[in-house]
Amino acid sequence: MKNELQNLDVNVEQFQAISQDILKEAARLGADQAEVGIAASKGFSISVHDEDVEKVEYNQDKVVEIRVFFGNRTGSSSISDLRPDAVRAAVEAACYIAKFTDKDTAAGIADKSELAFNYPQLALAYPWNISVEKAIELALDCEKQALAYDKRIISAEEVNVATGEALELYANSNGFIGYYPHTRHEISCVLVAKDKEEMQRDFSYTVNLDPTLLQSINSLAKEAADKTVKRLGGRRLPTQKAPVIFHAEEARGLIGLFVSAISGGSLYRKSSFLVDHLGKKIFPTFMHMYERPHLERALGSAPFDNDGVATRENVFVQDGILRSYSLGVYSARKLGMKTTGNAGGIHNLIVEYGKKDFKQLLKTMGRGLLVTEMMGSGINLLTGDYSRGASGYWVEDGEIQYPVHEITVAGKLQDMFARIVDISNDVDERGGVRTGSILIEEMMIAGD
Image (cartoon, rainbow, N blue to C red; front, side, top):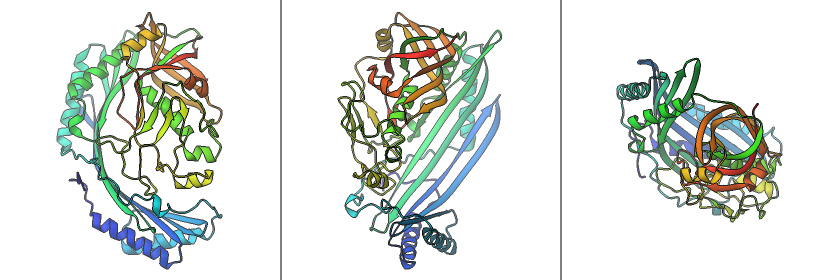
């Protein structure tokens, strides 16, 4: 296994043995099928404020999730105590619970033909051998540089450094057992600026599996300070309809709503506006979205999903048409379909972008709203109604004019998706959705 973890106190062989003991015990107690997931994680985070250490937190967790199936009845339990007696008691509890659950014909583990017996060995673990003392030093340096950037920066509300290592193992009674290690490291800087009586807050962050690819402290501090100062002098807008650009970081959340709408759970519960929309045009013809689950050093990568099914390169949108839903074994059975290897979510959704950079996208819009921060959760996935608080910048003649705040942007997701004009190449790779900034032809902006 590539990139074994260095700091996580985990015995993989012990976890494998525990998983097999659980499956054997479930079978002994009469279960037709069983599955077990074991996760272990370890790390720490620190934060500083006003040149002082505000918080140091260590975490070290192990959890075992057990699910058993008696025909169409399901029972589950979870524990963090790995002693044999505790493990046996947890299996017994899951089997006992199964006696009282309703029958569900979709229940059960994946078929053998769907399991990732030959899953790829992905390089997803890059330990950061950083001490707490060094992390504090980095945070204090970031705070110092941010405060020195502009005299209007009056406080670093929080500078945080976090590092973590984890291992995921899954096994089931169809003979599958697999595991993979992964890491996550992050530095964030939250600042407050003041000019006369006005105060504004903003932040920046860097996150990666590989600590050598984190943004430099100098760059991060400068970016956070620049964003915060630029928010000073914010105005409200008159209520109107106008073009809107969702900056890449917020565009990721917009595409995330599409991901939720095509997820199996939303579909079989009929709580999505995209029920029965396979093969229908949702986006403009230039839009394509696909999954790349095996990218190295990518936060959304995984060799298999939460069902032990092999992850694969699914195409969800092609030429603007919805080509596939995002399904795990259970949701696929509920819908009378096949799993797409997405139990637990989509792995690295790539939204194809155009040739324009961000400045060119502003020029394309000409006049309108650039959204850089969203607030609230006024979203109805069943109807597609969308209404959220926002802040950002007003744009005239393709140039940013002034910051705006205390506004609301509203529309229907169906219309918003259909009226996407262009996507710039400023792709934000700090999450499981990779997209550039998105220009929408028109939305309602509620202000004064």
